[in-house]
Image 1 (cartoon, rainbow, N blue to C red):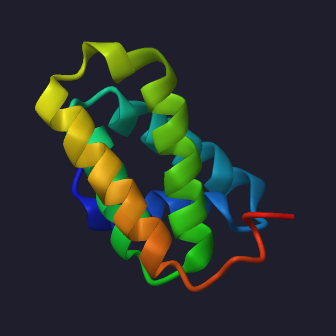
Image 2: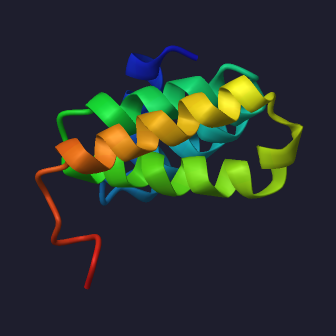
Length: 99
C-alpha cells in the first residue's frame, strides 16, 4: 500500500465512527501483511503533516520492528535508525511524546 493510502487508513482509525474504524482496521491488517508496509509507515513517520498520523505511524513501526528487527538486513537497520533520528530532530509536536 502506498503511504498516501496508508495515511488515509490511519486517519479513518482516528474518527469517532465505529463502522469506519472496523473497516479501517481490516484494511490496516491487510496492508500490514505486505512487505512494503514498513517503508510506508516509515515514510509517514517522517513526513505526514498531521502529528497524530506521525505518532500512529511511529507506534505501528515500533510494533512491527519488535519481532522483525533481527530479520532485517544491516543496511535496512542503519537506514531505519537514521530515518527515525532525523524524524525526531525535525519533530515539532512534543506534547504526545515525553509526558
